[in-house]
Figure 1 (cartoon, helix red, strand yellow):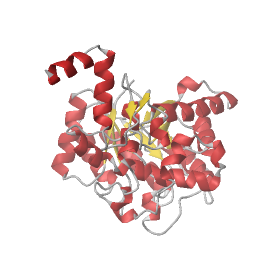
Figure 2 (cartoon, helix red, strand yellow; figure 1 turned 45 degrees about the vertical axis):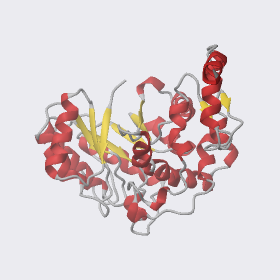
Figure 3 (tube, one colour; figure 1 turned 180 degrees about the vertical axis):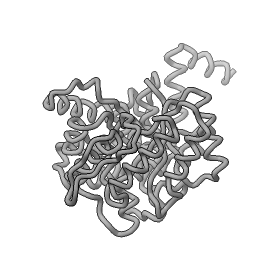
Figure 4 (cartoon, one colour; figure 1 turned 30 degrees about the vertical axis):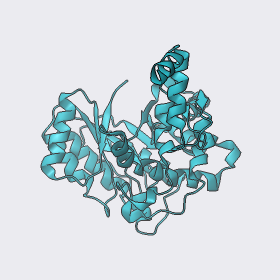
Length: 338
């Protein structure tokens, strides 16, 4: 297992450099940047300064797209960055979400994504590419191998990833959902004649250290962001073909303002309750408990569901349950009444 980090490109230049150096010093293997040129700073100048101020950490976009970035330009940029970084560039690419939608335009097609991804990799690695006009080649490139990561959730995107990519980017922190997607990816890899172990999996999810209430507010934007992709999937596939844990929490979603994409405190996350944020933690603790008023997605993960509603005696009920299991409840009551 390896650890990387992704920055939203709204930090100062000095802060970007410091965070990247700190990550490298602590063993992080990858440093990624969002690519949404209207909302934030352009990633490629930032990747340049990150490369110049580090030694071995790998660098890339998480993710770019072939609609706002013309593929031959992207290839030339990455080949140049490979010279600057001594061959440390990765390509993270998808159909285009916020970079397109903030301009009122839809994501590109999977066919275009496949065509562009193959073209970018071939050019960076020194191969001649046929296009609408004359064949083209970057005769000056170092010909470094370009690892390709494709972002996607749907069956067609996973099938494409299994055929041509070195890794998949899943913007999820839920272990069970990741297992569901990776299972499909591996099946598609076998169908394509590839060893599933050759395809890496990136589970991209936010993290914040602090008080629980602060942590919830700092990461609540992420399920809202993922909700866009989920809503897109639901519109194109039968809900029964998708896991309920993925589709359930977007039932109350009312829309999304891309001008406030991935923004802490945005109203975009108004439909994301604490139970959605806490769900991944519940699946990891030894004794998960849910209050009686929690959603079915949450109570389904609990070993114990309180009779009381949240804020109506649920905590007292759990404390009593634990003390009774330890044989301490009756002695405490007798001591209290004495």
